[in-house]
Image (cartoon, rainbow, N blue to C red; front, side, top):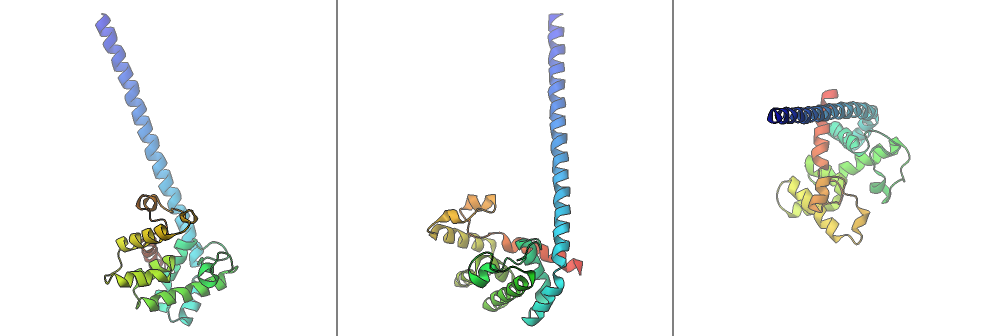
Length: 207
């Protein structure tokens, strides 16, 4: 009788444990699904905000002979700000060397398009390289061209590592991604070009 009672208790305990595991897995799946849903909603909102700037992007793309790359420029804006704020292209640093000197979208977009045009000219219209250079700066173009191979992800990581290692004060850079910290590549955004190219496909579909 004692053995049967003990077996019954063990079965009950196991049942409780299995029930808790099932409950935790269910909560985890629900939370993940909810996070994915919220992320999709947020991306949709940001996409719409960026699309509102298409007329200005088109205006300056024509001015700088970049009309072919309107969707790329919109994708850059998506990555930079999601279309938010007075400087949606985050172009202040390229204009005056510091954050905050641009205070309206018109100036931001004009400067952003002009700067991207400069990258495209320097790279002989290598779009992925130009996109990454928009984030890293013109020095990345020289670095990439010295490698005498096509732009790739490893090149971006190596450049970021180099700049981070050379910095007098590395704390001025924020590791934007966990991979950046793992690679000691916290200068800029090592996956900037990859993400912009993904956004570009979305904006091409929106047209």
